[in-house]
Image (cartoon, rainbow, N blue to C red):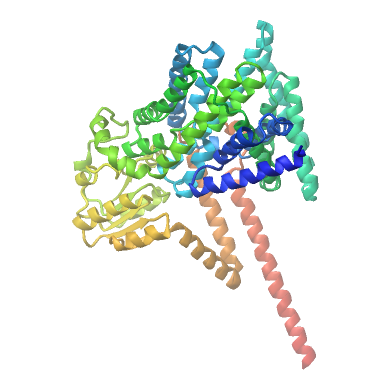
Length: 616
């Protein structure tokens, strides 16, 4: 009989081999973990004591996974979610739940089991989608921002659902009444802890890396211990602990030290899910798996597409977001696992959830990878139904918008004064934009704009570009940029064409397509660093002046952004420094730095003169 260490070693070798294979196929690593657990359980050590011990360790994985999500959760991100994203996500989630619940109930599942299966249907995978957007350098594109915004709202909804599910365990009306009150008490404890203890303790622990590591874990397990005492799961407590640490200045240090340990236990959690996969399904279970799998790639993208179109987003953006979010989420597995632990759902439902998540992640990866090709194929069909949606911002004044010499495709934060200067020089400027948040800013500043998307082949055909002298584009899609270049150069050959690229390869392609200058952000950042270093070595006052100007401009922009439509008004409990005080402090520090430089120079001059006198 092999020892636990030997069995665990064999399991880890299986994990390594399967993970390599999964990454070679460019699939999410969690699929490798789940498959490794299934293979080990089914073919190597099924039913052994090793499996039971790993499953016990996997329970820690759930706690650490929610702790990690809390650590990576930032309240400041909520400030920039427009109400359109919030409304769209809420409508989508309600429709997903209703459809999935109805089908599950019709297939013979109980009320509780149908509810848990419907919850699985509601969410998309943050781990998968965020990684793909990052790899494809699309996090700053419009569809990338909307996708990430929807995922943030879904994560918030998931935590709220975990909280509400605690109500299902209560039997009396009085107990149900006390559940939200206990939740408020838990949040109150977290706020008091942060305000009066946490920062002071972190300040001391930060001096010693080992102490910071131990203390951060202590915070996690403190809330994981308190939470069940108030009727909530340990996972809720772990998430709250993560959020409390995430909104401190030591967040990055904590995350860098804890992440390897958290990843290890997360690995065991997903391996444990592989242990729980069974192949002994009844016909109605198999029917449910097939039905949910089909609906995931049919109903989910259609609903997401229609809700975004209804809120005024353009055809391509809505399609890309819908494709990105067509899968089930690891968060759904966490919620169902909590239901299994509490005895509300059977292990069979858990196995169904795991299989569906694995299958949809596999297929969805290829959908996301080839989303541009998919759009080109479906575009002609989508155009036919696009006429049913008329955006709030869409204007029918394209023929009147003539005589513009400077055209921006995409909003640049240049300020109203910049456009006023252009008018003073006899140049009319126009901004072409399809992001509703930026449209709101343009309206506020009274800057001429045109709502539209380059992905619409008829849009550029109706634009008057004959008098264009300078055209600047922030569009990152290479094909759309080439379309802009071709159209502008065709109608105004002498126009200066400046476009933006997301990669070195795209930069060269756009130059070949006829661009006069290509903005490649990574290259520009390198150039800025070079300029800053040259300024520092020649005159530090240049750096200080640049700091004051940049900080002032950033604060002005922050003040303007506060006027945009937001999902939550959380500014009341997040204090921010006023623009005037911040600039004043920077100017004071700049003055101090200048004085120090002058004193050093004076001291150096006196020292040099005294030496010369000694020599004489």
